[in-house]
Image (cartoon, rainbow, N blue to C red; front, side, top):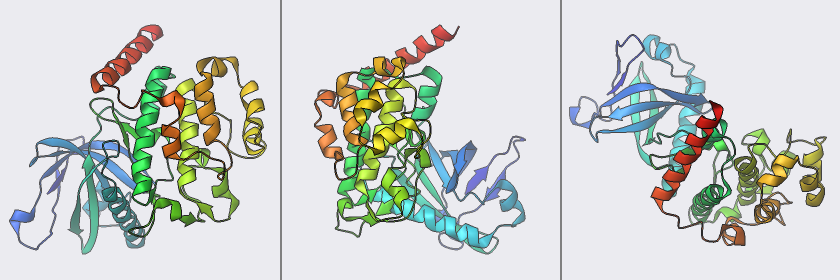
Length: 337
């Protein structure tokens, strides 16, 4: 059963029925708190009493505690969100990689004559990359190299299994107990037919987060799937390295964005603030430049992993990564006092 504990500690019981009246099919979860919510679901922190570990549970956003209590739910909206979560789960199950958040199971629930699903995943207790940069500022370049490799490896695994993420951003890069990167939130994922590569995926819909979208997504023309993940990665790496976005708004009329669209990367870098240019080595600039170009010129994730700037960063010991992040956070905390 799912047990939701509101702040007043009284619990609401939501029972799972995989097979009616079969008590052995019930899995106990204790809901602790809400971790976040978005267009495609609410994410809750829960404790799995069977496996004795914390997990994350994703529910349709329309299912609030009040809705579960009263049964007043928009069924059409619920069905759409259930389909979205199921699609997301199926895509994530295609990709088994240490830097991709792993699905534990789908729980099929029944409540007030309608069915819904909850997706249970591993829990990443150290927040996300946005939280880290917000708390401690730009990351040291050696640490960005490590996270760049981990993100690119995750995307390489996705693309090899016919999956295009389409929403790569700091908020979707979770950090596990050892500060290892976990690519999460496959809510707008595009999936190639089984047996096909992601490079075969041609898309037209405008999905993702506007600031991180590749320009071709907004063109209303068909576009290849895999290059859009590379563009988003370039934006993310810029932010991790500098603590600033590469442009003010991702649309024509923004001077830096226009430089990128025009292919004038030299002017793009030359006009960046001093604190941005000083924070980034020529090698980092070169890799990011190869990501923020037209899709037919854009580097692939596999080519990016072979870039000279990333050499040696793909095999850094976990303990060293954890120490580097802890040291960075401690230094930021000390500087703020």
